[in-house]
Image (cartoon, rainbow, N blue to C red; front, top):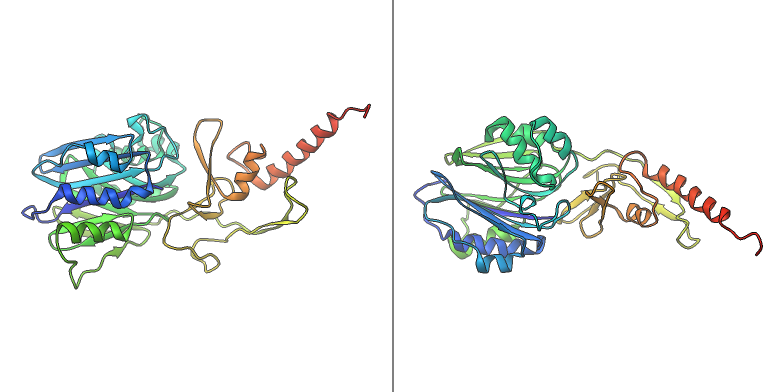
Length: 349
């Protein structure tokens, strides 16, 4: 889970306290990630400011550089690191490849394949870097639907390019929330409703009566080209369907049978979640909230997101790889544990 937020001036003559808006937005999304914070400011002549640091939003706001005059777009980010150490700035947002800057909330699992498609090498380790790298391979913000359709995992993004400084792309794929307020002169967006509402009311004025803050639907791209909005759609990632596995007894628990209940799909009526972020387990595909998820580092040094059952299996050394069936590996690992225990017994006792 991370936080994204920002403001875009549809009307280049519009006046707004961009420093105040940025600070308010970072404050509102601080709870979504305290490992790193950053922002980029784009004007009609390109990049005016780009700064990020491995600190929480409170410290970042205190010491950050100001938003320059002439800024048209400001993008802010607070990071909860799940892949790539925040101590290396290459892993923190906003991320840049070529002329493209991207902020991302979510976690994608096919970043290796995306780098191959883009024909580019990594600068850091964070999965999100694959998104601006893919934009750079296409060379235009208009490729957003194609880029988003390739992402395997959760994603809400904002993207700008120094070569297209009057444009902005906002897009929502699977799971990650995105709220947008679009008026004649301004566009404000954020990972939470409160981020947008607080920033507008504090620094612009009363919310417009006839314009609501939109909760962007999955599979939607909002492309603002020199202020004009064009909506496009794409097929968003959907987690694989899995069947329930009843009465799985975990050997390290008590004698009460444990039932692993797996949802068949997101939004099929069998699982109800609040508006907080959800993720799919990298092992079994079960959908869980961020608060329920566990995170482990695999043998290759990458962070794996796990449901409670797979997290427990990992703790006991029963999830050794990221491919194949977790349940089958658990059964096989259980046999190995028992077999080793029997072979190690002292026959004299």
